[in-house]
Image (tube, rainbow, N blue to C red; front, side, top):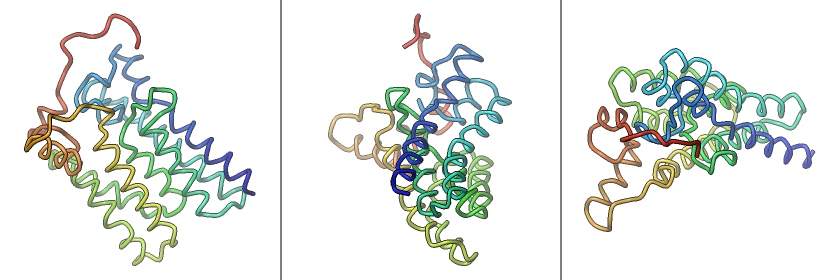
Length: 226
């Protein structure tokens, strides 16, 4: 059982590492999404800079690459903790993909794929928060709110105990990725650096304007594949 669990967790990470959004950007528009908007290899950047219809296949794949290893863990009788670990490994792969120089997305959709297995009610819970954020024009703080409140919701819904530690890990992964920001450099030490750090943690961007941040474009596309 230990060997199977380790292999499934490793497989989850490798599956999560498939950079779906990047491939969509390259195949559909010839664009490297790391150079557009927030610089994340994510569904939101596919929506803004590739094609809005493409968010459907990209989103489904990103959800599914965590759902599959988590579901397999349950089917193999390894238990919900292993299912959560395998799914969260896919989230880590999505955020820091080994196939893509550890430059990835934020993993929220992938985590929702984990919830489909360990706590299905968590999927519409998170989706509702993200929808509110989308309507209001800034989903980043609402994403944090969904993670902070998810264990409380799971408690009242009679969800499994594994939801709380899984959500805690996801919150750490989210904050860590926002702060690391695909190795985007911070300003020199001083007040502006502190402001950027706080913006990254709470709003997932470096500047005050969300609209300007997600619409950023490079001066020119690179002449060859990186």
